[in-house]
Length: 212
Ligand code: TYD
Image (cartoon, rainbow, N blue to C red; front, side, top):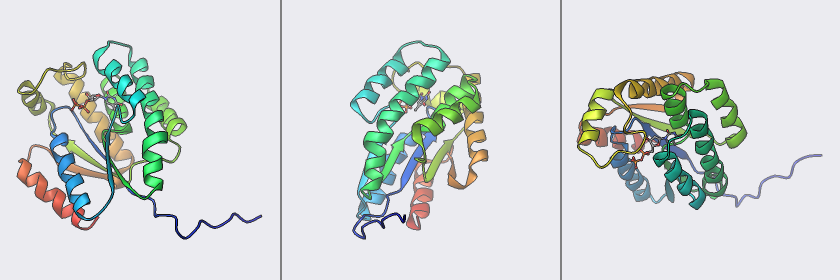
């Protein structure tokens, strides 16, 4: 039996772009800029975030950011939120031909819970497959900077959540988690030196997206 061909009117799948980095790296400033660049090209862009992006996932975000729990519980809350987010927002949007830009995704779980809290990397990989199937980012922008610099930036910002209150060693370990993740799938990663000025980073993003 042959499978029936897709109707020719089906839109091409959109692209899935994620923004990552330790707290204080400045990714939130730049995510807005990238969404504007893409919308200016006439693309339909869904801007979302993790944990979050659906009513249930936003409720889980509150729990995760404000309530103390074990590292394994953090992982399961993050993936519970992600399960709802992937199946009700991300996959339908991509299938409709929209581009999805997410402020954090699964690399955050590998970096914060795997790197920062020391949760078993292979368990995270197993959950990733079970929860997401073949839903993976096409492109990940990693805003990288030393934990020390990020801490200075955070000190000038608003009230800290549970993760932002962690010490420098924790953020060094989170950073190492991101590095390990990039080493495992280097082709989808773009490394942004977040110590550069906002203007320099904007220029770098503009150049990159001119041909993406
Ligand atoms: P963040 O995205 O930085 O939001 P805001 O800019 O409002 O502070 O905060 C989310 C926090 O959740 C951040 O400290 C990282 C953490 N986090 C995890 O620990 N694991 C995860 O899987 C995700 C998605 C986030």
